[in-house]
Amino acid sequence: MFKLTVYKKVNMSRNFFLLILIFLLVLVGGKIIMAHEKINTYKEAIKLYNAGNLRAAEKKFRAAKLNVVVTDHNQDINLKLSILSPIREVIEDLDEKAAGFYEKQDLDKLVDMYNRWQESRKKWVSGTAIQKKMYEEMVAFTKLDQDMLGYFSEIKQTNLAKLQNYSPKSSAEEEEVFNSLNQVPAEYYGGDTKKTKEIQTAFHNYYAAIMSKLTAANAPVVDITVEGERQFGMLAKFSIDVRWITDTLDRHLVNALSSALAKKDYSTFAEQANTVKRLSASMGTAKVFPFIGKSKTDLLADAKKLVAGNKFADAISIYEALRPLENTDQLLTNANLAWDKYEPIRVLQRLNPGKEFPHFVNAKNKWGADSVIAAISKDGGIYLGKLKGEEAMVVTEGSLQGSPMISKLTFQSNLSKADNPVIYIEAKSSERKHRYIAYEVRTNSMEKILDVEADNLTVESKYSLLADNPTGSGAGQLAYYELSSDGDYQFTKIKVDYVDISVQDIAQYYGKKVRFTAYTTVNQSGGALVTLSETYNYSTERWDKTYLLLKGQSTLMIYRDYTVIGTFTSYTNITDDYGEQIRVPVFQIEKVE
Image 1 (cartoon, rainbow, N blue to C red):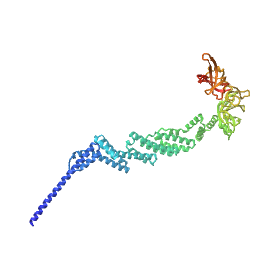
Image 2 (image 1 turned 180 degrees about the vertical axis):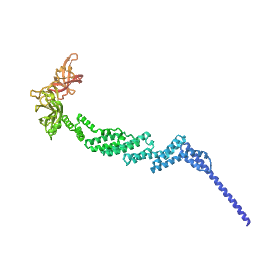
Image 3 (image 1 turned 60 degrees about the vertical axis):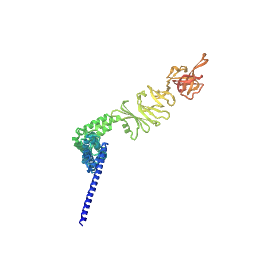
Image 4 (image 1 turned 90 degrees about the horizontal axis):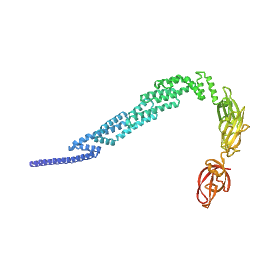
């Protein structure tokens, strides 16, 4: 019994020590394995570190540090992590928090994150090359820069869109938009200068559009004034130039007050003027304020200038409007009389109600009158009216036969020997380019003194007209029409503008219009040849000939005499009877008689 007990104890003790030994062996083996892993991890980290892959290296250094079984390389690991980990932790923290604040639309805290980022960037970018590289890797990995760009760009565009869509409903909301845009960092505008300009431009356009909408709709002056006061206050608060709104309001309010005066709505004018004065502190020396004080004087002066500038309707409108303030009866009489003399068609229309005068022409200070008008009515009547002083218009009437389509109406008094008014009409012609008609206004009557259809008509000399291609006598030529003893213009002769020569002398008349008779012998080079000379050359035993080439008429036949008019204009080469090239003059035919 005793021996068995001792044996068991010895056996148990041996087993215990074996277990301890096995445990220790496992621990030692595990430590060796862990040490090996740590060394491998460290080596990988160093390899990544040296290769410039710092974010991955930092991750390996952290994994190696977590292996606490052995302390190998801990000093270097801690050193590397002391450089790399703070950068990783800060960038990850900034990225996470910025996303959260953007999600919550907490712009103040998002701006704080941006400022922290800028401080970190300044610190690490200007630090060691390793810090700069790690910073750049972390920003690229987290896309913090792109996220910040997206956050602030969206905030910026959202608030700019509010202005473009006129979303703000109060000054407080406008100020909120302004503050939000100002909080967006300058780099997302392209710099401080561009930031200021873009924000100010956006608000300028926003306020200008609101004011433009009011002025374009001719909103009540009180509404425009209230909005103007509000905008002046907001623009001052935002430090934005107010000159544009001053100019806009000044122009519009002057127009509005002028409109009220023109409409003789003086109670409205006074009410508007009193309201506009509320803007005096903001608009300074704007033109609207002295305008209010001297409106009547200015309007009278303007009306006087308008009369002098022949803008009678505007002047009369002002005189009519100012009647309650001043007796303008005489001014109205004078303005209407001046208008009648400037546009005597008005008088003619009053004398002939219901008639239309599509064609008329005026003259001043002629034929014993202050103002003269010649007019043709739509129904074919022809009129001459004279105004002198305050006398009634003296009218002479006639009838225009054939209802020609008139293109021009003028006075041509040089066609009259008695210096009477001559109404000169240019109309359309069915046979020529124009029809020319003239009526001389004699004592209480109208006499037709010209009726010619031609391509053109000019005054050649006193009482002599030159018609180009008239119908009838002179057709196809320049013809003279001269004043006859009956007092009208009649065909007299053809104008000759060429020289009669012998064809053999053509070389002396280069570039001049001539007429000659010639005998054609050969068709060549698109024309007909005329033999100028023919001499027998005994040395060559052949005839030497000189030629003239007639061109411009394809119907010339050979072996015929032609009398032609035209111009020797150039030279050309032809082939003679012997097959040789010779140089000959070219005559361009205008007419074959």
